[in-house]
Length: 285
Image (cartoon, rainbow, N blue to C red; front, side, top):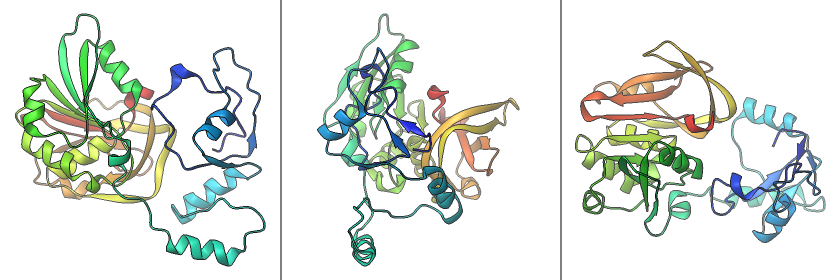
């Protein structure tokens, strides 16, 4: 985290986006274990201890961020000062990066987030869905049924949804083959929309390609241009992969939004199939 003080606000139950933390480690410049916030239910330290999350403070995190910006995403270890550098390098070389992370974070069974006087029924494929996305859909009159990433076409259609939502989530979109196959089978039969990982999955389902960015898009200050309206929005983003723009040719998808920092594809649609997606966390503006 590049903000200089972490832990000031404590942990507020209403602000959780997942049921449990999914990080493996936390690197900060300065750590505060005594928050000042009447909404805080626990301290950050309490949560890290409960879920066995290792952390380190006293690091120049802004310098570290600049290094990642210049050199790209890299492996790292959190160790004590007595651990030899040779041992650290050997550990990193022998450690494979995690794959198929969606299978770890997806719900194991379907559940429903209801709302008063629902106007629409949406099935949301949980690839690591944020609670605020569900709340945003509820606020717009959608009853949301959250389903595992392995849900089948038959199971979705048996719910008689008005639309299918493919959620955000971690990792390489190519690992989410069951969801890619689901979108491919249902495109043109249901309105489909996606955010973040869901955006990448939709592109793959239409035959486009994705690639890993040198360093991911992180933070809440990414300018994105809507090509249909000409307007620019400042968006929140957190992803490591992007859709290859030139791979969209001939797929039926057209680009609707672009990132003004690096020109990457931020939105796409297939009007004939009633399919659209964005990679930014638009509900988090």
